[in-house]
Amino acid sequence: TRLYSGGRDSCVRRWNLVDRVDGCERTFWEHTDWVNEVVWCRGNLLLTASNDRTVKLFRDVAETDDGDTHEEQPPCEDSEQSFSDSVSGVSQPALELLSFSVHTDYVKGVAYSSNRNEAVSVGLDGRAVLYDLNCGRNVCEAIDMGEDSKGASLYAVAMAKKGNLFSTASSTGVIRCWDPRCLSRHAFSLKGHTTIVKSLLSDDFGTLLVSGSSDCHIRAWDLRQQSCMQRLRCHRDSVWTMTTSTPRDLRVVFSAGRSGHVVRTDFRNLQSEEIWKVEEPILSLAMDKSHRALWVATTQPHIRQITLGPPASVELSTSAAASDSSAVDSGAVSRASRVICTLEGKPGLIRAELLNNRRQILAQDQLGELTLWDVTSGSCIDTFPVHTGEPYHKQQSTTFEQRCTETHDLAFVERLQILNEEVSLPNFFTIDTKISSITVNLNYPRCFACKVYVCEVFPLLKDPADLTLIVNYGRLLLFSIFRRWRTQVVAYLEEQQALRAVALQHEEEVKDDDDHSPTEGEGSEGETSTAALSNKQSTSSRIATREQATDLDLWPAPKYSFEMNENVLVIISDPNHVAPAVVKRVGEWSLNDPLPGWLKDTLLSRSFTPPIQPHKISFSM
Image: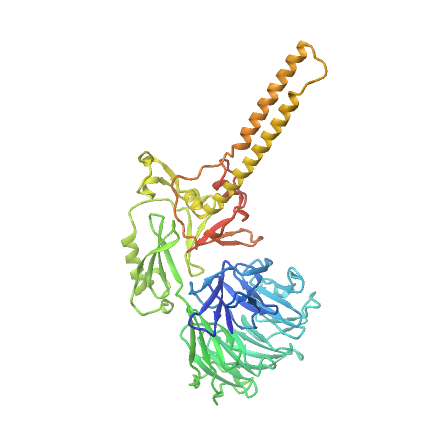
């Protein structure tokens, strides 16, 4: 039994639920931004949606102890795990089958129908896209949402496993239902929520639908009558995620959201109870295969499994009319709900600051621990623990001056003042911690803005004459990242040039033999002089061609370079998001990997062609 989760660290992880000591057994770096949804599809496939505006379909084939492969059983699924940075496990690329780049903004959700083998994705661009996984393509570029929904973002989607309907929820609170066989217009609309609908849950046959909204209500809809059956206010804040233990008829629904409460709702007797509570917001819920436990993912870097005890007899709302109350009572939290398993991750980085030397970065994680990172090696070089026992997410300050009064911020500022040197260098890259790790962005032409004396970067000079040598910081960094690619390309070019030189030499020998072959009769003296001159010019031309064939005219490799960690993740992304991003580790780049033209010129050529829309080079530490 395995659990798949997608996190804000841009990766998908596979967790071993049998041998829980090992925890994460495989990590897939398929995306470059937050993973918002992970859905299991038939045929041992995973469908993921991300903030990098792509939907990806890939296969994960598990290996047995004897090295054979076998297909997985459909596991539990969890999405949008947490700020987790990294966990123990082997990071490997999955077998990516398809990458869809139809959306122009964050892809917030994806749903799958096993009966039709189709999927639907929705995003903040207001688009809903239908995919036919039988032929591996998107059926339509975007479904027309209608004039009344222009400019509205889509946050949730639900698709019946065996039915013919799917539903989308927008920021206007309107739910639209669609028939995939006729996408010219939606079948009907469901209105009732007053604000953003963040979660949808459909039964297996497409006859019932449950929605959760930022108005703190959950509603049960009858899709056959196109009406709302029940409305319950069972949360104190926005409802973000839902799951069910009875997918056939949605009798029992579990919901959670910003308040950190997990609420069980029984629509048979209209009872709701809080079965578990956590201090941080809850991002996702997933039902265990046994239907006796629930997997809970929050903004913290771990996933918890809680038991599901018998329902309590505390009635929070007894009818649709009673649901109009301003808020639910605290209720009786089920004592049987307790944490029985925790899948541990590592705290992600929440802030980072570049030092004045433009080489080191001071970062702080969720627990307040300070780390010092070296950009030129892509590794952590020092750690400064902060023992406060207070997680960063509890700090509610807004302005910088207020945050500096907190313990973690004061420690960060003090350490930053100690480490910063009184030097002034132009900043040739930008950094961010959006995916809970330090991401260094090298953008053209800013990446070539910093030039320094080589003795300032490499104190131990190979040659004393290099004391006044000036080097480009960004160029050295790019050489260090793509050293393996450049080495293979140069070796390939030298081999090809050597083969061409041998071929030209062979042609010269054959032609010389033809020139010195005996002719019938003898020409005049003038004809002999003309022939000799022609042979001389032909020989000079062949010599020049041979010299040109052996001269690569490459930019020489730098005399000094950095030793970059081979496990650093490198990302080459298209600024227009037309082509999918290329994601590889430093030690994985090879001869056949595509690189942008300006980067090739930087690594190889003496000439340089300025790009019109340059690709962005990033690497994550």
